[in-house]
Image 1 (cartoon, rainbow, N blue to C red):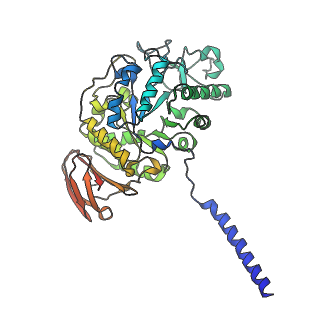
Image 2: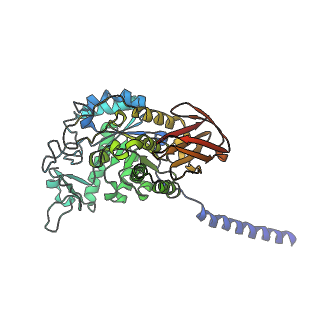
Image 3: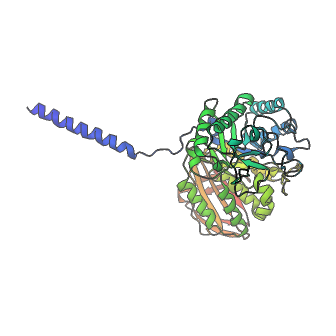
Length: 456
């Protein structure tokens, strides 16, 4: 009897434990990001190419000559602005906008041929780099053949006419209707076309948030079946990370950096850093920048936007959580807004900005603390007594650690930092100066100066 009683008790306990374990599983944390990032993207950097303005010729072949320089600088992902033929109807300027696409499966003859493009992709791959192309899925040129072959694929005004994307002055394009299943299939097949025909590695999606998320989720699935792709969304929202995009823009960092530099007020920048740590999915990538084609052409060049604090802002984009972008000519000190609808070649010359990008890009490659998403280290605030002027934080992953200290003011600042939990020997990235951090660290920071301390 005793044995039967013991067996019964153990059976009940086992059942209770099993139930407890089953119930507890629903409380286990789940990673929000469900896509798998390409393995090579975990410590990648990115560079945007404005092909029209990059060289006097403005061709794929002419751009190829710059690849060794970009490789040396530490670039991994080459992002090409749209490569497709540009519409002529309602064109803006003499050359038109890259983003008014006349044929989603063709090459802009100004840039060269399909063979030229395939050769460029092959060259990029042969150097250990990757290439994504800009995809304008929200709208097309007025004279894209789809407008006559499939008028039902476009949104219309009350009068039944084609229209630019509502509320915008994009008069050279007309708006697609993603409620049409056949159109969704066409656009997905067009995305797959460039993977199959040119072996590209993914896309940058123009105004990605204007296109339904379920379209992107399915497109990503179909693209990944061909090869692992890297997807960048021109947008800033959480939902795109789940099943669609590896990376989104960090528009808000750009704005808060501009405020920090021009108004010398840091609360907004601190709030950005707090939100990044506390609300962005751990395995989401964010693209950080001080310039891109939109900011440059429509909101001024980096020198206008960041003034004396430009280098400080550039360094900040290279050490926060995210993937740092360099825009065409930025490394050469581009100090003007490039024309968008006309020929306006970049003046290539040596500039100290190239040193910043070079040092930061190469540090990212080898220092796991700065890697992307969950592969990198969380930003931990290093408390200091000048937090209205000085941003300081620590990132650590495995045996690597980085401690950036940046003076966002036009004043010389004496600052004391609490480095009790970050003790050790560090080397400053740009000067090579050695630091041995103790419980407390006292520094004098010149106006707009910065230190990137790399743990030895």
